[in-house]
Length: 114
Length: 110
Image 1 (cartoon, rainbow over the protein chains, first blue to last red):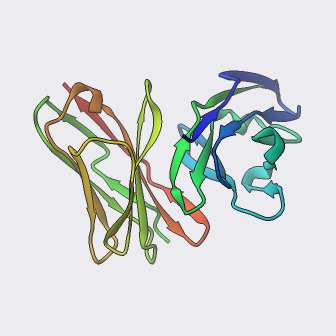
Image 2 (cartoon, rainbow over the protein chains, first blue to last red):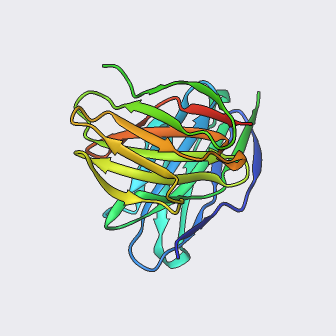
């Protein structure tokens, strides 16, 4: 069965520091992988997705994620965090045949210190 | 271009009642999906519609149903409401590989 774990419930970083949010998935076939961000002012938003091809995926707002099949991971990174990045981040995995039937991780809450 | 709209934004119902939520996708988008978000269960996929056909359904009881109209607008219905149905219900529409979410309908069941 599909599952997604996000080991960090809450992370605090200083503005300008780099960020890495961890995501591990369990899925028997080739997964579709997603990162979403949810903030009070912006609602839920798709940051980036991996379907196939290049394992380093670029998204919106300066985020990127790397798919590592051997580690069943899809970690999200940003080189320099802005205060506006404070939000809840969700990793999700979907089936190759239907990318919309996704399983979401529990989320990581990000706080940014000015 | 208008975004995904959901109505109503807030709703209070009592146990046993039924509720219908509406979602209007971005113009031209034919795929609409629904999600439920609760503090206890997190985000969960409900169902997805494309061109008036349900393509996928999440692991929810039959009390949860939906439909899509020819103009791509979608409705979801929950019958015989339970306290645990209190949640934020989100819908999203896809165009190609980009997904857009609505602001959600917050349902409170008393």
